Amino acid sequence: MGDVLGRKQRIKNDDWIQALAKIEKLVQKKELDRLAEKTVKEIRKKTRGKKAAYAWSGGKDSLVLGELCRQAGISPCVLVICNLEYPAFIEWVNAHKPPELSIINTGQDIKWLAAHPQMLFPQNSKYASMWFQIVQHRGQSKYYKENHLDMLLLGRRRADGNYVGRGDNVYTNKQGVTRYSPLSEWTHEQMLAYIHYHNLEMPPIYSWKNGYLCGTHPWPARQWTGSVENAWAEIYEIDSQVVHQAAGHIQSAQDFLNKLK
Image (tube, rainbow, N blue to C red):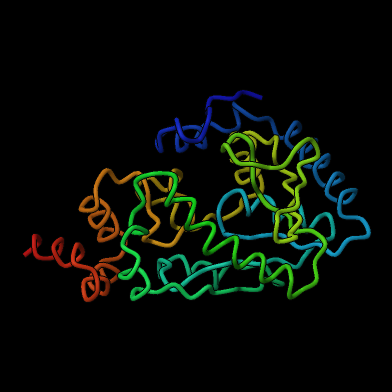
């Protein structure tokens, strides 16, 4: 297998697109099949005798995770959203969601965003990670406890710089939620190869500007924009209605629209 993509934070969006275009040269299907089979066996072993589910975000990693979990006999899954998602993403979810998906909405809306301006287009990792804490982590914890789970499987990988636990890729947080990351050692190329060879359809986010860098996320959590004005311009290109609706509550959105006149 050939690795051309390094740490996610250093990869340009075009690098992802180019890697996917030549993925058959980078990852052979036979080698990928062996890796997938090994991962499925590990999932079965780690979850044996446990009530388990997986986190599904619709993003590329979770699409692969979902396929492998179902092969390992794990079907229940959870998607956590808020009221600030891209409408096109929600449409895609409704058309492609796994059969046993539960959706939890943590409730953040445009009025909440106006009251928490620091959360708009985070320019540093502190506020970017806060989005995961207040939406994904909170919703996953709620799902975990309500369904009396023993383990929640995630699509986290070390190549993304994510924490996956020590040694066995399992850890339990202070809230008592045990998370397991079976894809922790998968490379970016292997993820793309699985999606390619198995013809998995990805959400529209990956065709938008910096889609591979941003991934699935509420629109105010959009990163890598350089400025607030650039962020509004990118979102306007994706869905102008989002900007028009935001302008009624957020001055910078109104300022952007005024410059278009």
